[in-house]
Image (tube, rainbow, N blue to C red):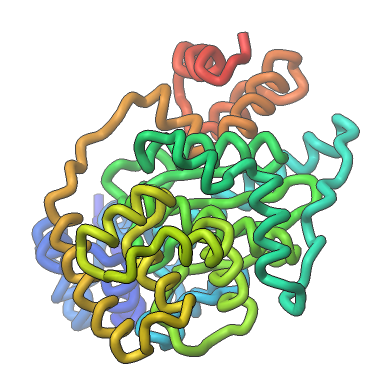
Amino acid sequence: MPTFRVPVSPVVLDWAVQRSGVPLDDIHHKFPDLDAWRQGARQPTFNQLEKLAHTTHTPFGTFFLSTPPVDDVPIPDFRTMANAGVSTPSPNLLETIFICQQRQEWYREHALISGAEPLGFIGSANIRESVPETAQRIREQLRFSSADRRQDSTWADALRRLIDSAEDAGILVMVSGIVGNNTHRGLDPDEFRGFALSDSLAPVIFINGADTKAAQIFTLVHEVAHLWIGQTALSDVSLDRTGGNETELWCNKVAAEVLVPLDSLRAEHRKRIDVEELDRLAKLYKVSTLVVLKRIYDTGSLPWDAYQAAYQEELRRVLRLLSRKDSSGGNYYYTQPLRVSRRFARAVISDASTGRTLHRDAFRLLGTRKYETFVNLGKEVGVA
């Protein structure tokens, strides 16, 4: 029986390989004939093409195009890298956004059927409003004052309490460092920190769980600020930007004021910017030392050039510390509800138990495959 081979445009092959982010040596190891395919000397078999699509996270049908498609981020993109726009999204980012949009669509329908009332804080502000006043309203809504945080012994404790408060307010908060449940597809904080999908019934905030706990706290509050103005947005939450989108800068200012109020910092700061003082203030407010530095600059006690120099030096120190970070995994039944939102998981499991949602669909939405896992997740989120 003859082998069926598929003619594939070399430019599409090059695009798929480059876009995937998978090291070229790894792809060559799996597909020794890759160079021959790219040069048009040979053609892959149907099965080889299916495997290549899986390896490069490329939709299979794309390989039948003569030219590569243009990948557009499906939500407003406010990311910057060194104050320049980011043009090409990775498959990991795109798939993560699509997964969250599917969950949001399901939850919105669930909320409508359940007779839920629109959330009053969604779209309740605009970027012309006072930053301190908006920050105070958010702080009160999230029950996340400086005094509250002093009771939290670690950044992880503060983050967990912040997530719970946001979910109690009606926001679906999803925190994950991987695509879906695929531990081999990690999310890169250098590509994005988080995003918000605004909706009056089903607002979603996704936080890149591969980031530090301190960074996740800031990102979560930043994305809440986007919801406050009713805006869907993809963010990298850059603290050293000097320009860019006016809305993104405003959300940064609001998040900084929520977490480190200037009046409080002026009273607490010992007028030094050494490592010991930065660490002390970071622990006090449960933020990163980089946020502390930015807020010291905001008080007017640090010139711009001195701030930039101190920021770059502190960034290098933080990156050295991160390089020693333990990347071991955690308990599935603890992390999975955080990945999909505990509020979302409770709704899906409750709906499935009444028969309104098929178990097949519930498994897909929650990223589970076995009924036993589904039941145990229900127990974890308080649904018998």
